[in-house]
Length: 163
Image 1: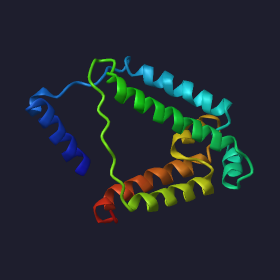
Image 2: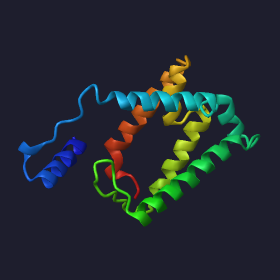
Image 3: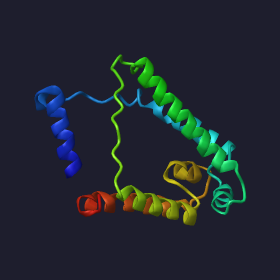
C-alpha cells in the first residue's frame, strides 16, 4: 500500500495530474531485458559465481576467487559513478543521471549481517538465485521464497525498525 501511495505521489509530482501517466514499454520492447538477463546468467554460470562451493570457499576463507569478483565489481562501480558525475553523462533518452547521496544508519549493519548470514547458509545471494534455478538447482526455490518473504516482512515493518 505504501509503495502504491509513493508511486502515485511521484506520478502526480512529475506529470502534474493523474491523466498524464506514461504507458510502459511494449511486450516486444521488453525482450531486451530478457536477453540481458540471459547473458548475465550465462556469465554467472561460466564464471562459477553462482556456485554454492565457491560461495562456501569464500565464507570459509579458503579461496580469494569470490573476493576478487566482488572487489572488481566494487571498483568498476566506483569508477563508473565517478565518470558519470565528472562528465555529466546522460541516459539513452538524454535525461541527466542524478545520483543522490546516501545516509548511513544503524539498520544497515543489522540488515547486512542478516543478509550475509542468509548468504552463507544458503550459498546464494538474491542476484544469482534465478541463474541457479535456471541451471536446474530447484532446491533454490526455497531460498527464493525466503528472500521474497524477507523482503515483504521488511517492507511491512520498516517504519518500526531501528534507523
